[in-house]
Image (cartoon, rainbow, N blue to C red; front, side, top):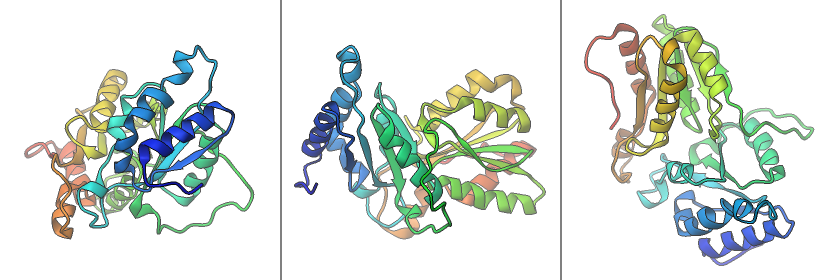
Length: 280
């Protein structure tokens, strides 16, 4: 259904439709502007099942593009996943490949709770073969995108590909990096994270939201709470700088996590020489 560009209105319409038995999919067009619908998402989608004592399910999917990387300027490059992570009642998923995008979206539509489905603008041109027959993927499970033994790199969305690029460089330097695509940002799949860290003993957390108050801080906390005995070193957290995203390409790139940042952090974690690498 085509609607006027009024995020608060069409999100509210979808929530009402979901409460009445439909399974609507909301396209946010640009996820940054879903801040205009934050009241509907937080106070209605996230809470109705609880405040109604289970009388209403809210099987709505809120999806759309977002993230940094196409010179879209500050308003269209916002990362709102950290804002939504604090909202009770939501499930948050970040797809990263055509294969998991299709399987996760099918699962999200079948889910009886509201799901926020993040799609990074730089993943839209990725091509790969996917099964012809329908399939689903679990909403709450991470994926080991690359096996490794020396260091765990936790990533999501576009950062999966940043991590994989860095892992190739590290392999040439004699380091084996395991890349874990979190996929589910809420809830986090701590079982998969802990299994990887138990194997490698070291961890780098990649976060495209801002360093202050970002998702990476929550991941860091849960890693320390659950994996401290398995860690040889304190994890390194790489995140976007705490500034509005610039328009100029070189300035834009300077604000986000790059493969070289990951390589430098991995080398530092292994050698423990030099200043702590940060991206803040």
